[in-house]
Image 1 (cartoon, rainbow, N blue to C red):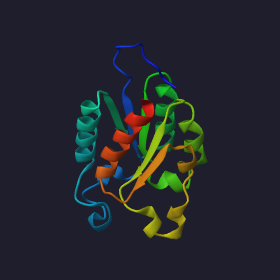
Image 2 (cartoon, rainbow, N blue to C red):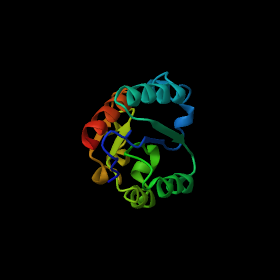
Image 3 (tube, rainbow, N blue to C red):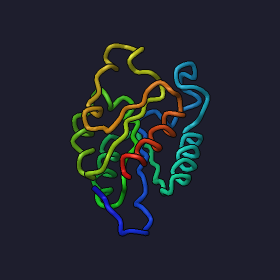
Image 4 (cartoon, rainbow, N blue to C red):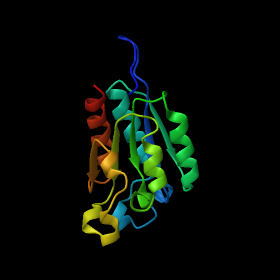
Length: 153
């Protein structure tokens, strides 16, 4: 767990978005809504700032890149908010990397994955997460940051 000296600013929250989330607002708006990834990041930045945290946000379509970011984050962040997208259901490698920073994790999904195809009902990330938020659109990111701030303390 990352700790700071009393009175020091907390380490930033790391916001990670997985494959295809760069196409928010274009890809299946009936499922994911009209908001863009820029809207997600702006909402997350505002929420984190309101709670006294900085935010580092990144999105990738390359699993190895996300794993590298998690390796590099150890000792540099207070917690993780992640929408692993399709890797939620497929990536043991991502799950293995998520424990490396040794910080609390909140898993976010824009859609309610439990109302969708059966393969989306299993998550390799959920057993590692302090909480899972699904089905609230991009507001789920706000909820996740608020809850993560409570968990961090």
